[in-house]
Length: 298
Length: 328
Image (cartoon, rainbow over the protein chains, first blue to last red):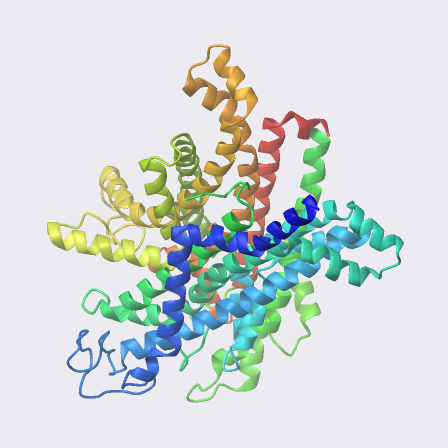
């Protein structure tokens, strides 16, 4: 009877609730979550409140500094484009690309890492070899070389490339944990009951590393945004006429001393976005596993 | 130990060969040197273009495996081929490699040494002002792309220059043109003035990155028994920390150095572009825009060699520091 009562108490304070409580106790993580929500609002709702569209040119106001009176809150570019609308458009692109890339690269890392760790032997050696090879070549070089393949085509190809060259380090970590999970009793039981390998990986291995995957996916969003803007800055990423925060900064820096608003807003928003994402990722890590190294790292 | 090094060396060469092959095939598939001649007025005859591309070993009418054979044949003789601008790739490498290496070596050494020291101090003063201040600034620096750091440093320097009415920092190139004939001391000072900003922009990221990891590993070590023993036998706190603490705490870092070297090369490419240094990274970016397959492949080989060398160095450091690895 006593144990039953205790169980009920445990249920009222479930793991999910515990994690939520720990997460919201972390001021930086809450700041990050709030900031990211604001940025999403800015990116997807604010452009509808602005009277200028991102691809619309205002020939009466070229190179106007930021002002409230003429409606160009962030000023205008050399050809009269509204910097606010352009920055928001770039933020949309960077956010979407960051989320998609993080989702796919973490997914790929989970599957490859768990397969390598669980199957061991030859599969493990082959997959690890591929990982080592991809780590030898900086992903920036590979994507830049391949950039002509998606020039003039959809930016989704760019997302696929970013994900395809960004999963290796997470996969290595997942492999390490899967190797130890393989020896655990519940996995052994599943093996002896004849559960197929694929199901063991998806039902028994991956759910047990879900917290790691969630944390890594969050941190990968920041990494993906950094890679995307870097490549776009050099003209290897999002292609004109479409804009990303990286390509906006590249255009804005030509005359940056005289007209700093051309790149400064995009730059600050970019830093803020990545900062919020890494605060959330760090907060999640502390919430999931307060004892881990890197916990409390502020 | 010797066997360990030989095994690593063999793996090293295999990886370089595969990375180079991959680089050549990717570049040959993705880049179209022929498109450089599109839209010229008057149009260039196809046979002229063919002849030129054949000479460069970049003709898309020749199957890639055959071009690869040519390329490898040249490589075996130590020849990387010809660039789009008809200069030897070897010549370009010989001038540019030092520009990049200077930036990369100084940047990585400064970044890792300062990063380790800052990390150790942060760990020792956990939750004190230094730790909190450094933690927040590291977060901000790591959230800023390298190119933005470089741009902000560049414009900050220009702003300082105009404020004090004197060019203290130079933001373009390695040295001021026309100074080659000047006295060596003047040229040296001038080079330093050019060198400061790009190095700073590479170093900052490294310091932020390494110090965060070093802080975590150091915190683990600080709580360990052997450090208490070291203090108990009469070492001062500083001696115990640096002799017994850091040696253990730095181990996981050496592997990190190897992994992050690729990021460093990427960072150098941005820094070279923004500060107008004619290094390997800037060359690579120009080469991709010019569809220059030979130059691109050369830079891919160069960066693979650098990443692998740093990995090898990390392995040897770990083996030297950790007796358990040596015995295995």
